[in-house]
Image 1: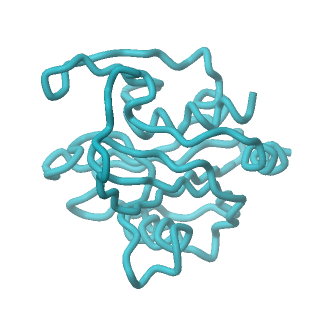
Image 2 (image 1 turned 90 degrees about the horizontal axis):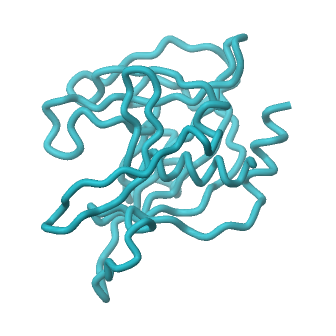
Length: 195
């Protein structure tokens, strides 16, 4: 059963990850202040196999326009922790009712180049729901097969210049969706834990 496999993945010991994993020469600044964020790695099975819920961010957003991401965002003072933040954000961004989410556990945190420490919350969506993309923030809500994004052979390492240096990062393209950066790295970590 997929929930058992996901449960085992949560208990496997692996370290944290960052957007700098593939760039060993990059030195992170001492004393940097990271902001807390959380994302929901939501797995849903509508009868055609387990799939992961992802969003395409609005192309007119100031930060990460048009990028593929998990539902999620900053942990607010009013949130009772990362899981509560991930559930709140998933409800706001894609209309996922928290009552339909069974949390399996927490994956290792991921540090982003934009100064966040992201806590991925692995969960199962227990029933179908009508997605409602948050106007102005989400252009599209879609599902990718879990077995695709947990197959390490589907990941590639690509590079581009960022702040004057070549930076390498994971990608796991799926159809018209270019999944890269923090989202791909979190999925890569899940793939490693499920192998």
